[in-house]
Image 1 (cartoon, helix red, strand yellow):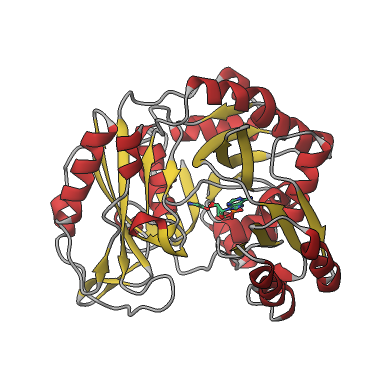
Image 2 (image 1 turned 120 degrees about the vertical axis):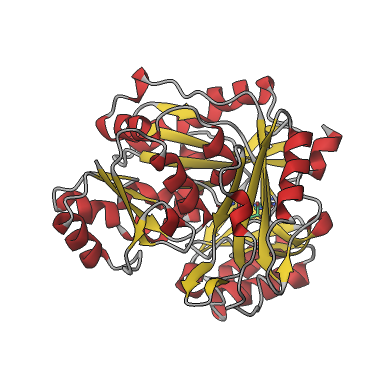
Amino acid sequence: MKVLIVGSGGREHAIAASVAKSPQVDKIYCAPGNAGIGQLAECVPIGAMEFDRLVAFAREKEIDLTIVGMDDPLVGGLVDEMEAAGLRVFGPRKNAAILEGSKAFSKDLMKKYHIPTADYENFDDPEKALAYLEKAKMPVVLKADGLALGKGVLICQTLEEAKKGVKTIMEDKKFGEAGSRMVVEEFMTGREVSVLSFVDGKTIRIMSSAQDHKRALDGDKGLNTGGMGTFSPSPFYTPQVDAFCRKYIYQATVDAMAAEGRPFKGVIFFGLMLTENGPRVLEYNARFGDPEAQVVLPRMKNDMIDVVNACIDGTLDQTDLVFEDNAAVCVVLASKGYPVSYEKGFVIEGLEHFDGKEGYYCFHAGTKQTEEGIVTNGGRVLGVTAKGQDLKEARSNAYRATEWVSFDNKYMRRDIGKAIDEA
Ligand code: AMP
Ligand code: GLY
């Protein structure tokens, strides 16, 4: 069969690597892809938001299955357009991808269906938000309603900061139209865990847990990024936490979406915080996490195509997910200056060291093939993933492998997985 993957990051490289393992797959295309994905797939220069061109391409090449990796096209309704053209596609429709596309929607859903999350209020008028904040307990969390590349969240320690935050989000529109509406949320503390799941509209199957490192600098300092590294499984995701989430969060979310006439088919990513009072949902995403996918998918034993087909056909109840009994760590190699400003176009050396090495992966995020070779082409450049028998071994393998590649302005966090030592 022929598969088209939509997206161009490390997540899409990890998806492509999983798809490539399936004996059912003859050919993979990726739009637009990157230099690493190009080693597994034929990259086609069509942007993820060029819906008409994607539909035309899938028809012309007689694509059997399209997998949409990225949030923007999902929230924008690419799945609906492909389905309308008679194409088979994996991902939530627009009316379900709103679970990620609108934080106000997802908060209202959780409230209505009693899914544990932080207390909140939604605002579309900055004056009302300011009046509310005068009486709110600090610190407080402000969130732009719409998609903002994971950056539309402000944690404000004081009323002064919170007032500035309202201006930043709602008046200066730093995150664009995403900030026309805003959620003001209670500040919570605890460990964060990412749980990805496959969903077929009714049934949900949970993947192995992971933990991201969102801040740019060691010790969780610096600005929020798309993610600087991950490990899987999370030792903090205990059987007790799992039991709680299965009882109050996972199926409840799937049932809530169905009850709202928005059946969700695809991947739900639960961003959880393990608070003193039990797990709470921080956020939902309507797709695989990045870089979570880079540690979770390499450990999945199932044929990815079988699982995706079960989601589309509504037969996931007949599928069990199986994960290797080991661990994986991913360290992101970024360009110095990310996420603010950074240079691109530096030649990357040493990628061949990964060839044929079992349990080691170099997922490309921002890279480009040029005449001089593969060059850096983004803030996050590569995701170096290694497996190990346990998290400690995986971490030492991953950090060793980060030394195999070099490029100018290479930057990484040195403490990915440090939390493992506290487990
Ligand atoms: P989100 O995009 O909603 O996951 O928010 C990004 C990050 O902000 C999360 O991963 C948390 O680290 C932090 N965050 C979001 N909401 C809260 C909250 N209610 N309390 C504390 N931290 C939060
Ligand atoms: N790693 C967080 C995300 O994919 O949103």
